[in-house]
Image (cartoon, rainbow, N blue to C red; front, side, top):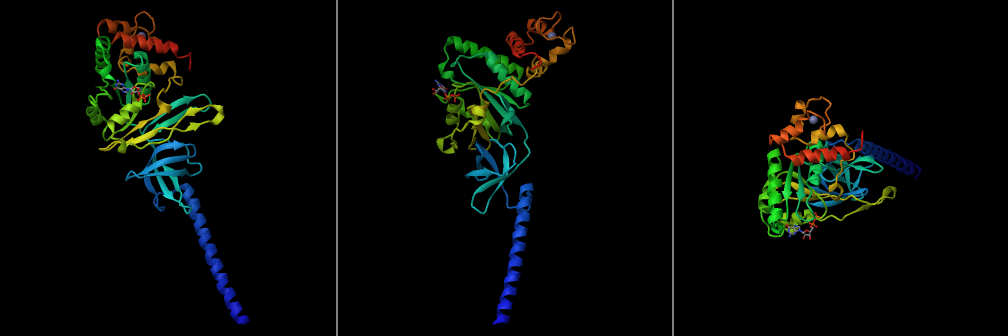
Length: 337
Ligand code: GDP
Ligand code: ZN
């Protein structure tokens, strides 16, 4: 009896030891997990569709969507991020790692400095329309931000079904100004479907984002481009940190023949408040090559004698509108900021 008990105890002891070993191994693995061993763990590749506070909607390579938690200290994780995720013991999906980004779009925030809104964009579409009122300076501000982010950009002229003789003439002129700078342009109508397939061709296999003022038709474009079944619908989230209400959710939609398009309320009005006056010229790619011809090396291109900009306008090398907008935006950027 005693011997038996002794034997059992030994069995128990070794079982306890074995369990302890297992637990330790598990803990070690969990610790490794926080350092993310991409090879050893059973991590699946995926992409972030939309962020909701501390959770994200992610899609795997088959386009299946999951709501997932973020591993602690993961860092910034936004729509378009390529990630690795796994299912934990509780059956929850956990994003364990974020792959290096090829690009990111940022916007300044009142309290948190510069914040990344979306990642891995390789084409920006700036959407403009006759309604709400078109303003070339608004378009140019977007283009500056796109150029400073080093992301190829195209311009979508939407609502062409609403053109009247005046707006038709205006937009023909605008189209030629921006085409001659080198921006691809598309004239489309979500209402009639005009050129929507042509636009789709330009988006396919790319990682696109729509920007533009509210009301120009970004959501309508998503719906026109894709049958409803293709669209992944994400809810809009309100982030109420620090007492400010900012709508932050961006949503990624898969295109039927590859690639995706992100509609991001957070980036719709991405500002220029974080750029320096000296940086602005790099955002005007048609004016940048002219600066070497200015009389003064530190020419601000506003009204200095010998500024090459006015001469280039006279020669028809650049549009007066662009020079005027450069000057207006330059003046609007507060000194040294
Ligand atoms: P968003 O704020 O940029 O997402 O703009 P919406 O997609 O919500 O569109 C704003 C308004 O413009 C809606 O009433 C749309 O029906 C309308 N709209 C969008 N595209 C077109 C278009 O091509 N033609 C016309 N006539 N209206 C459009
Ligand atoms: Zn100059």
